[in-house]
Image (tube, rainbow, N blue to C red):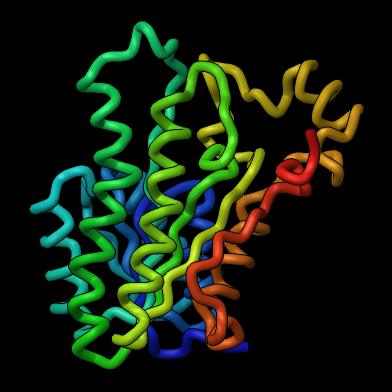
Length: 257
């Protein structure tokens, strides 16, 4: 199957976790993948993995919380491939913080990465997509965008804003042939699962409550590849009549209480 043969796909935060799994899946199905990330070492390693799969991959060191850096990313991609068919807004950041002890700078840093970064990437990529007659954007949100959680007001608020950005741009960019959708992962085994030096998916409380008591109906955390599969579907022609949707990929967590 080559759903993305000859297409150019940008994946932000593409050097690790869900981003890397998505980049590898798209590359395996014919895409020329551009991965954007802040870590040069991880980006170079991810680029080697993609090169072994196929296509013409590119790594662009990018801090998407910087508007000029996003312009550079889009410019390099256009110079490299001449078009942008798929944009995956995946980059994020998370840390635990009590709301009353939060700082304005740290709050802004989360929003600049999750919300403003996606906005800048979407805006710049959509210009190219409009000129070429269309494209697809998939935003990686979280079920945190519709749920409250202690010590993560910054992250949850940003993901909620990202969900609205998904819906609004889906409506506004439709006349240009641009589809915009999102995925909302639950507990996925990635680097963001490690909080305070401990993988929360390996703690006793997680095993007892989310697995043992089936707060997650499927009784397990998810894997990056499982989220990547849904992202790839939304980015493919198989989802040609899906617009403005935010698809939970959470083992059923968001249907329980």
